[in-house]
Amino acid sequence: MQQTHGSIDALIARAREESPPPIDVTHRVLETLRARALSASAPLLVFSAGSLAAALTALAYGFFLIQTITDPVTALFGAAAPF
Image 1: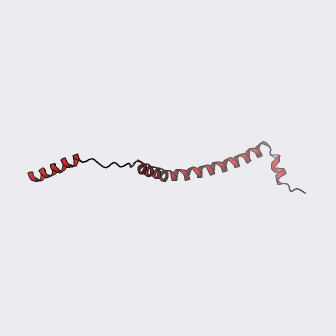
Image 2: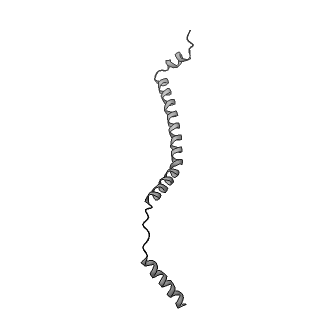
Image 3: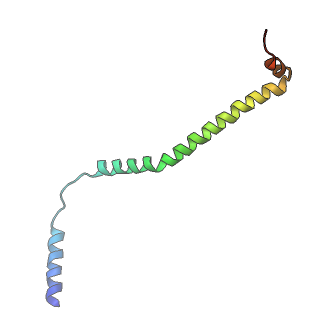
């Protein structure tokens, strides 16, 4: 049992003496984070586009109603066929 601990301790001591190779991984990490951020925000973009379309439709319909309410005779002239 002591031999096993002794060989592990020797291996640990050798591993501490080694220096890791210089590797720059920041570029790959940032690319991965950007890809995850884009894929995570895709449903939010779709929901925002749908909300925008609904809001623009309501705005256009509201504008038509405001014009009709402020001048009710306009609807009568719009319904009459020009000769």
